[in-house]
Amino acid sequence: QVQLVESGGGLVQAGDSLRLSCAASGRTFNNYVMGWFRQAPGSERDFVAAIRWYGGNPYYADSVKGRFTISRDNAKNTVYLQMNILSPEDSAVYYCAAARNGLIRRAADAYDYWGQGTQVTVSS
Image (cartoon, rainbow, N blue to C red):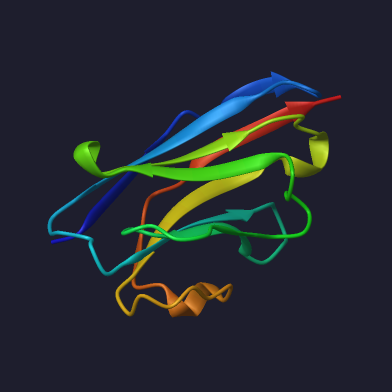
């Protein structure tokens, strides 16, 4: 059973940084794509970033490019999302997701497993 557990969310001020973590367990993820999504109240779940577990270039939504960095630590089975220069528009529940097919997609329905989410709130 695949489990994804996010942590690291919280309340910060505009301009601050946060690092989210996603601990993955239940199988080996060598061929998986790991993604981060976010969902604000009343909005759809939006793509933020994705990376292949075995490496390669990461992909980002235009809204976070240059501010957010996705990375993974294979030894710890953990994926990270470093978020810098946060703004109130970044406030949302952030979800970690995993896709079996190894193809980086921006659509939420392309991902097979989801974490429970972690709240990020950025005050102005």
